[in-house]
Each structure stands twice: as C-alpha cells, then as structure tokens.
Length: 126
Image (cartoon, rainbow, N blue to C red):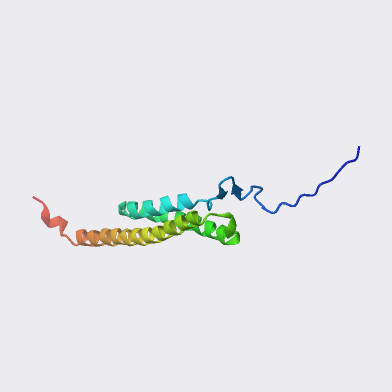
C-alpha cells in the first residue's frame, strides 16, 4: 500500500469555516456590542459607573469585531455588521452620558462637602 501525504492549507487561522448552510456568519460579538451599548445608555443613571464600564467594554469589543470584519468582509453578514455599528454608536453615547453624570456626581459631592464644612457646627448646640 502506498502512503499518501496530503498537505492541506488552512486558509482560515481560526480553523472554522466562515460560511454555514445559510450563508455568511455573523460578526463576532455584534449582538453583545448592541446589548452592551443599549445598556450603557439605560444604566448611565447608576451614578455613571455601570454605564461607563459597559460602554467601555462595548467599545473594545466593537473595535475587535470591526477589525475582523474589514479583514474579511465577504465572510460576514452585513446586517450583523450594521448591528455592531449601531451598538458602537450607542456605546459612545452611553459612555459620554455616563462620564458626564459621573463628573456631575463628583462635583456635587465636592460642593455639598464644601458647604457642610463652612457651617458653624459648634454654634448649633442646644
């Protein structure tokens, strides 16, 4: 028997095919970016911290997904790329709103602390 050596080239470094039976696959994390972007807007009123964290995570995920899409745009569906772009816009808006609200809370606490420190507490005894 003859031994045959087949050298298959792996064109996709991830090892997975980019197409399934229905056609192109979704951009990785496109749904997660959209959900995190919307949640960053909704949760910006939680002292700005939660919305800021979610917005930053969504922006990091969207930059990675955007790079993957531009690397091989024919393998991914356009609708999932548009979802990722919408999530990125929501994440930018949520991050800006959360940062503004967080700064407002910080300045408010500084203002209240300053006002309370100027009250003559020793003269308010009964």
